[in-house]
Image (cartoon, rainbow, N blue to C red; front, side, top):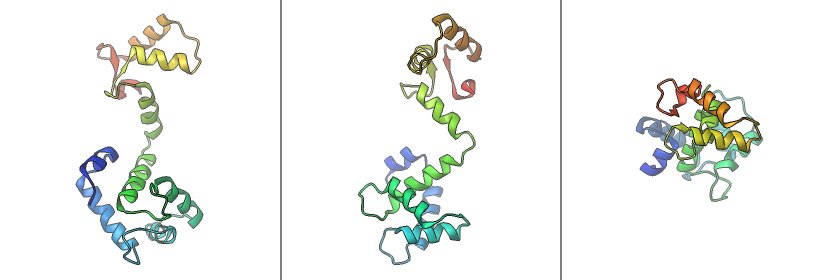
Length: 150
């Protein structure tokens, strides 16, 4: 149905994948194994989304990796994961946090913080960055977690 690798990349669990598969099967009116713009628009309206076919076309094009003009189940899962992520009230904070931690380990080290601050053109001295880091680093481990970042 959906590879474990893609499921992990999208942050989906088995229940979510099954839920998306059930919806996909209902929306796939012609049983082609893909959803057209009109099928997706119809399905979204059924779910209470106030969206027109043009907007759906834009959404579809963002995940239509093979350029077919239709999306298969894995592409629908990608779309749904993105939509779910965007509806998260902390979406912008999480996105900003990911910009800072370059190693992908879930923490922001002082060097990473300094690198980003310098690259965005902020005029801060090393001592100011160190002070900022010390103030936010509540457990004094020399790195910031997402919670400390907030």
